[in-house]
Image (tube, rainbow, N blue to C red; front, side, top):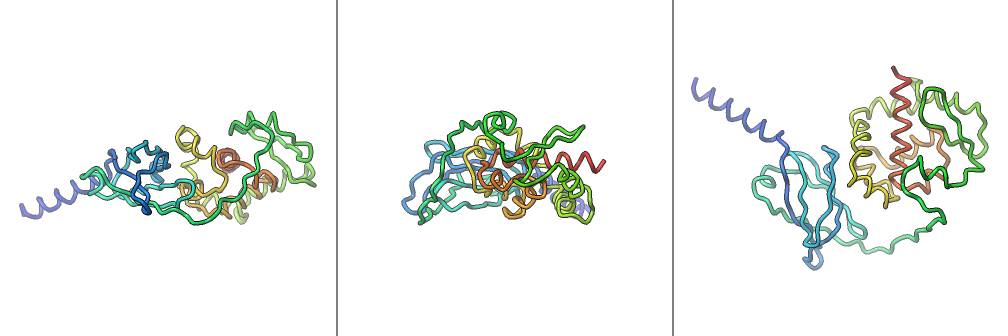
Length: 252
């Protein structure tokens, strides 16, 4: 009987330890030459927390056993690492990243000074060809597609509230992951990271939603194809969050 009690106590202790959040320390280096990598973005996909490596390639982030850490750096292949008990027990885990052998696509810089905040940027970017619609009781306005008319608002509302619709099914099935949106918006490390990105890769990893599906969501929320194509990832996050907030309001 004592052995059984001891065994159960041991298992319970391991379970509590595995769920406890603590600091995970490590170093990121290049596989090619074993040199440390500075300014690598390190994200905890489970806890929605982020940090960057220092000049020595070192990072320090809060995590629990079985959390997933996502490492990304321009010109290198992004990787995901599952946190183990050994990583917590023995600080100093080394993470190797492989350089990508391809030319970067040309990035066209617009003449507008963007801050990454939709509410501010919207005041400085011309929207002559895009109508904006606002719904009473809701904070955001809809950016219409080029040839849309005011009747499109009804279609958007229908897409959000229709149980058989794309948005309703997507938001319902991804509710657990989409709850991270608020935390992502409030985390400065993540906001700064998304401000410089345009590939939707980090958003896709953190929300566990395919990049194509993310773009489909904004299309069904009636954002223009120009916005979906040209917005940085922080602007994309704000738009996605606004659309999801409306879904939650209409669902009540």
